[in-house]
Image (tube, rainbow over all chains, first blue to last red; front, side, top):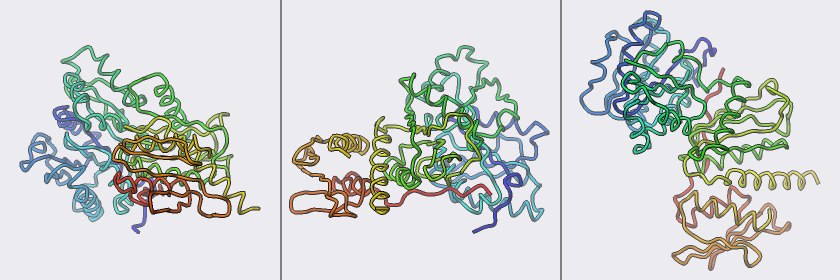
Length: 340
Length: 96
């Protein structure tokens, strides 16, 4: 396995996504004009045999790469990880400028989840890079239609850490679109942008992949409210008073991945583990990829209940809780059997 | 786990797998009947059967399952609802 650099030493990656015509290239071009972010390496994924987008971004140095053989999420994932690894090697060797961040612009048809998987699972990439967040552009004019008709657009919105309403100068009234986005993703901040102008410090803020316990608790709380009050949200909330045995949690997550992996967009939680209830475990998963359980130092509040939120499509609302209850009962019985 | 609890879990699982069927508490277990005529019975194993916890029965066949995850996998495969890839869970690399 490749030795891993300390988190702060690793190069942050921001994934910029959005449906066709949402204005990703315009935004990217504006970002790169800002001298503070000129040290960015850019990877553009273009769908089709003739790359066009990279011609529109005035970067033009050795750290600008176009991956043009197909859709990043389904065809060139390996190319992406190879590209990142190669870029990092060349950076260390001084063959390219010492860039400070990577921006990946996906094709408009990309589902971001497999891209995130590639970034999280490839040990060569993870040794030198860290995923900072996902920014999704939604066209103020046509975004609602795209969300209605295209599952890719929905998934781009659901997986976002930041949502940008592009072309806001053309559509001053976006209440309905914002409500639709809130239903899909209740916690990502939404910001309107005209002419692709977004404050970079807002766009590059650390996303939900951080495991700050207070931020995670706030996310869980917001998702819980949304799940209870909004009919359009496919968020399922589990709350448990009693700590959960580690074996039961592991088996449950494995069964979730096995049976609902493709439908499970995100799973997050703060869980009281029966074997160490004083230190909550933060759980994160994107589809079937689960981050290692992380034992946090302390609970963020006096509320010691386990809370888990699943965001998914087509998962029966009570199935995760029923599954967990069944597994917990078996683990408890097995523990009792072995201990006599 | 009571038969009604098992029935509810299996009914939800069928919905998740997009399989049509009726799930009933019958015959000392849970019976699953699909529109194409398949009939499967899930019975709880006795304490003497441990580590087996569940039996999945179909005409001429009786398969042991060690727990709920194994039962769901076996059931899904028996229904031809897309083979559940075993051990598909993958761990992301830890933060250093």
